Image 1 (spheres, rainbow, N blue to C red):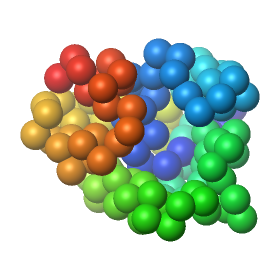
Image 2: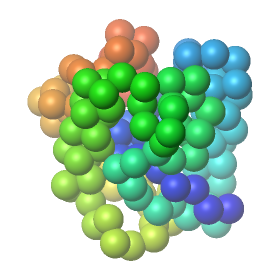
Image 3: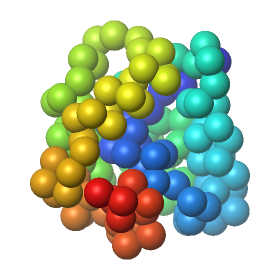
Image 4: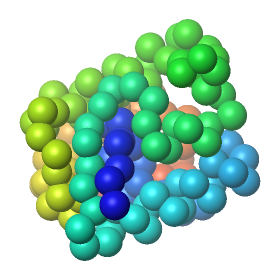
Length: 128
């Protein structure tokens, strides 16, 4: 299985607990969260709409419908991706272990998660 994931979604998936924009989004996010844990799943990184975004009701013409929100999302992606090798395809399990090592404190995610509308529900954020 191959996944394409935005930088900030590497954090979101670890804190996901069933919240989302609508039922289709939650179902897709749940499926991707399960797939990323399977042996043999690979991940390609991006700072543009990914396999999670495809079910987002806010995605129009391959951009978040709100330009300001789209800029924030790209900024969050870039902050995460700046710590990773974006040219390689990762084994999903290895990638998420690496992400856990890099983003392991509130300070390490302050520029990312503080901009997120879900940070008050996110287990990844709350457990740091």
